[in-house]
Amino acid sequence: MAKTEKRKRAKKQRSITAKLMRGIIMILFLTVFIPFFAYYNLPEWVYYLAPGTRLWLAIDEINGTYGTGEFDETVRVVEKRLDSNIEIYTADGRFIYSTAAMTDQLPTDLSRAPTVDDKYQLTYQTVDGEISAGDRGFLLRTYTSTHLDIQFLDVYGYLEGGERIEICMQVSQLSTTGKLYFIISFVAIMISMALALFIIMLYIRRFTKSVKQVCDTTDKMARLDFSEKCPETSVMELSQLSDSINTLSDSLDIALTDLKQKNEKLQEDIEKERTIDNLRQTFISGISHELKTPIAIIQGYAEGAKMFYQSGNAAMADSYCDTVMEEATRMNTMILKLLEITKYDSGAYEPVREDFDVRTLVQNWFDRNASILEDRGVRVINRIPEGLVGNGDSVILDSVVNNYLSNALSHVEGEMRIEADWEEVDGKHRIYVFNTGKEIQKKDIDNIWTSFYRADKSLSRSQGRFGLGLAIVASIQKLHNEKYGVENVKDGVRFWFDVKKGVSLPGESEEQAT
Image (cartoon, rainbow, N blue to C red):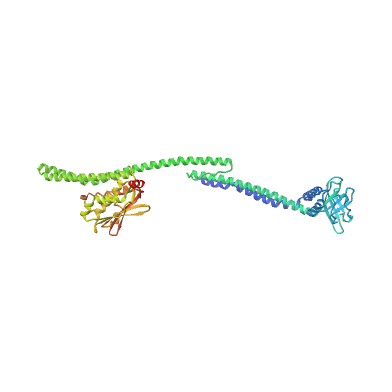
């Protein structure tokens, strides 16, 4: 219902720009209509105003050069410019100049000018007005010829020396010119008005654009999107409104961001508690499952040892006690490994990052297990170069190397070969541990990182393997935010893990400094 009402209201509303456009179109229509209407309906005298004014000013222009060498030139320039006829009479009525007579150059002192033949004097019949001495005025006269009568507008005045000057133009010419001037003037005025309104419309459009941007910004704020800010404007009130909205946007953004961060922290805490709870349940479930057998063995052998001691068979009793101790030791090792996985996965342990020699870390395992490798006839190859420096917690990364190589030793077959190799991948050291033997089946390759999972079910408990070594590797690598994995290759299986590059070992840096 609200959306329907909003649409109905929008149909009835029109923008300021649209209303102004309608006004400008109306003014442009009037600009065209009114001059045509006036052209055919205004009285004739209206059209004499502009030309008559020009003639009036022309007398002042000529009078301004009276008594100078420029007087004659000014008279002829005015004649040509106005396409008019000029006649000049001395104060005593002598006819001294006429446009029609092609008079010689007028002298500076007009009293010395020669008289012009009267035949060059236009014979007028005054229709309206009469000449008065010492004054100015307009006369409407008719020039009568044998064939036609021509009507003139005559403007007369007096020069500084008392000479009378008359400037006349044909009325037909004045009417046409006056109408043209009128139309041009009126159109110019109307166009100026239209242009003024157009400029006003542009300013209002800029104003409405700013208002629209403010509306868009507040709409986004309503949708909790504070990325867009109101633009600055030259209008003081709009600028203050924009600043207020921007301040409100920033405040809401900070408040909601803070609330979001607290909510995320709460979610992380809840997730952490859930993870710890799951780890606890997994630990309890796994330890319960794995301890059933050794506890049963311990219980049975303890009862047997007691029975043999009671019967006087000390040797058998000692043998049973040794079995109980072995099982207790195995249970302790398994529990410690489970606790290690739980510690890494819960985030309770923070790795101590330092630079270390990667080759030494691998070679130490080969050296520690040299006798076992020799007894089993295993050939080892360490291709990791000397001086390869990694960065991380070398104490727990030693556990990664130990679990990978121990796993390789448990599964090595065929050529009985274990290799350690290296390459650079994505700016990291990728360490490989390869052993010849059987491939890992596809159904097992994603599960071997799970606690208590054994891909090779034939391995017995006597070998001390619980299916926790690779789970520890996964936990340590996740703790370092580094990758790990396994792949079947030709003649065997290759495990790998990534180590961040180091700079140099502490001993090396000190040696270089000296």
